[in-house]
Image (cartoon, rainbow, N blue to C red; front, side):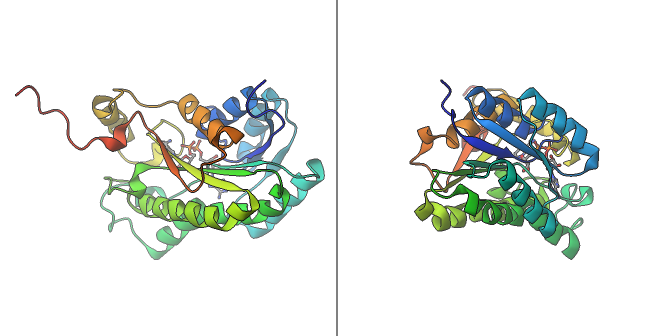
Amino acid sequence: MGFLQGKRALITGIASERSIASGIAEAMHREGAELAFTYQNDKLKSRVEKAAAEYGSDIVLPLDVSDDAQIAACFEQLGQRWNDGFDILVHAIAFAPREAIAGQFLDGLTRENFALSHDISAYSLAALAKAARPAMQGRKGAVLTLSYLGAERALQNYNVMGVAKASLEATVRYLALNLGAEGIRVNAISAGPIKTLAASGIAGFRKILGHVEANAPLRRTVTIEDVGNVGAFLCSDLAAGVTGEVTYVDAGYNIVGMTGLGEE
Ligand code: NAD
C-alpha cells in the first residue's frame, strides 16, 4: 500500500511532461493518491487532460491564478466532485516576463514586471490556500509549493523572480502559522535547476545546469522524479511533524561555498 493511499490531491502547474508538477503527480499517483488537475489556459487543456487520464483522473479544471473568479469557480467545481473535501494542494506556478529574467536586475525592472511576478508567483499560493481551506478541514491537509535558491541568494539573471520567491517562502511560513491549528501543513521544496518551459525563459539556463553539475556535491542536476518523491513525502502523514519549511532538492548545491581550488 502506498503512503498516500486514501488521500486526494489537487495538482496545479502541469504545462508539459517535463513540468515539475508532472513529477509530483507521478509520485503521488504511485503512492496511491487520487488526483485532480488544473490547466492555465485552453492551449494547455488537452495536454493536462491527457496527463490526468494516465493517472485515472477525469477531474481537469481551468485555473488562471490572476483571475479571482476562476479561483472561486475552480474550488466550487472541485467541491462538486470531491464533496467531502480533499487533502493536498500542490502549487507549481510561477511567471515573470522574459525581459525581467535576463541581464541586470534594474535594467528589466518595471513596476508592472515586479507586481506581475509577485502576483502570479507568490500571492497565488496564499490565494489558493485561502480558497482550499474550507475543503481541507479535519483531514490532516498539506500544501506544497516550489521555490528556488534565488529566494535566498542573488543569482545572475534570476532577478525579480528571486524577489518573488523570497516572498513565496515567507508566505509559506505565514500560512503554516495560520493554518497549523487546523492541522494543515504548508511546505516548499527549493528545487535545483531542471529544464522545463518556465526555466527556459531564464537567460543562460544551459550554463546554469552545467555549473550545478560541476559544483553540486552529487555532481549532477536533479530530475522531476527527485522532486516528485520528496513532494509526495512532504504531503504525506510520514511528514506529519514538518511545516513551514523549505526543503532543498538540489543535489546539495545550496550548501557549497567554494570548490575547484585543485590540489594544494
Ligand atoms: P513549467 O513551465 O512546466 O510550469 C510552470 C507552470 O506555471 C505552468 O504549468 C504554467 O501553466 C503555470 N502558470 C504560469 N502562469 C500561470 C497563471 N497565471 N495561472 C495558472 N498557472 C500559471 O515549469 P516548472 O519548472 O515545472 O515550474 C513549476 C514551479 O517550479 C515554478 O514555481 C518554478 O518557479 C519552480 N521551480 C522550477 C525550477 C526549474 O529549474 N525548473 C527550479 C526551482 C523551482
